[in-house]
Amino acid sequence: MTDLTKRTWAEIDLSAIGHNYHAIRAQLPEGCRFLGVVKADAYGHGALRVSSLLQSLGAEYLAVSCLDEAIELRHGGIEIPILILGHTPAEYTKVLLDYSLTQTSSALAKALEYSEAASRLGGRLKMHIKLDTGMARLGYLCDGALFEEGVQNVITSCGLPGLDFEGIYTHFSVSDETDEGSRAFTKKQFRLFQAVIGEVASQGGFHFSIRHCANSGAVVNYPETALDMVRPGLLLYGYGGENRFDLRPAMRLVSTISTIKHQEPGTDVSYGRHFRTSRRTRMGVVAAGYADGIPRLSSNKCSYRVAGADAPQLGTVCMDMCMVDLTDIYDAEVGSEVEIFGPNNDICRIADAAQTIPYELLCSVSKRVPRVYVRGSY
Image 1 (tube, rainbow, N blue to C red):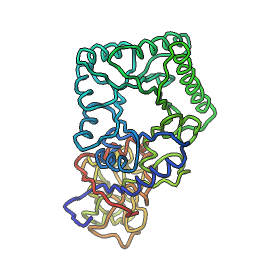
Image 2 (image 1 turned 120 degrees about the vertical axis):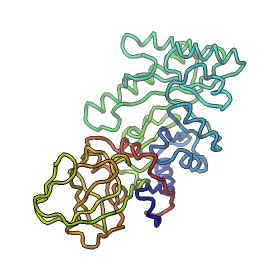
Image 3 (image 1 turned 135 degrees about the vertical axis):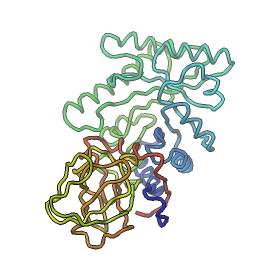
Image 4 (image 1 turned 90 degrees about the vertical axis):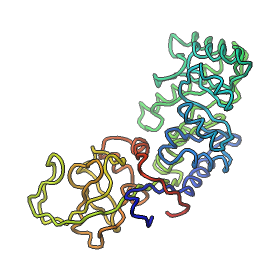
């Protein structure tokens, strides 16, 4: 980036996403489909650009959170199937049909509403059943005493007119955790998922063509859960799984040093006076703050990469800027690039400092931060 009017920007390496796609795909059993999760603007990477890349690489499916995200992709020329993971009101069934979208059904009551609407329109809406096997979020209840009722609700749904139930899925809540309790819970979820599918087949004679439950954590830790399709999200963007697949971070959040000043010992820095200099400090002002996506909770607890060295962040992160210590980084000057996170400054360091997860940081890079698409820069 040479245009410094773009004070802060996010470099998105499309070749890294392509590399990650192939690295993940190489771990899958033969015939297993690849669903790329591109919700939330592809975790901040740009949903249309990422979806176009995945489509060209041969991904069979995409997943978004809501109807608006799906329509954006269709308008952008995306033709492969798109699964909407969240709820869409039945009044928009015509839109779902017009755009050839696949809708999740998370309860019998919702399936009944879609069936009535699709039948009235004379269409056939493609659907996936969502089972709640332990996430306690969306999905047909089917655990414990509700098992038989859940099975019957799925069978009833699959027999409704106007609906084509292509798939069934669930979501693991702790598949990225490796402690004994988390492993036991994930395996319990998987057994329940398989049990429901088995009973739907034996009692209702219905067989789903796509069974999917492997999110990023499960792709890495539970390869036996791949079944007919996997749903990598964070893995696709280069994070997770202790990098067992040789993944490459695809986003590099970059800013610049806008000002350098020398502060005397005992100088209070930024809002709240939560940092005080203990020596004469060569302090740089970074042209990025929490309105750009730097978490305020990371204040005084992380470093950014400047001129090949770690520059400790000092004081409370402001809305549009923050400060770093350049005292020992002699090559840093006004205009120097600041890698807030990326290949040279692991996003997990800032996530840990802010007591959050990389997902949140990627999704928090704001719309005012321009995305610059590159290939093979890292």
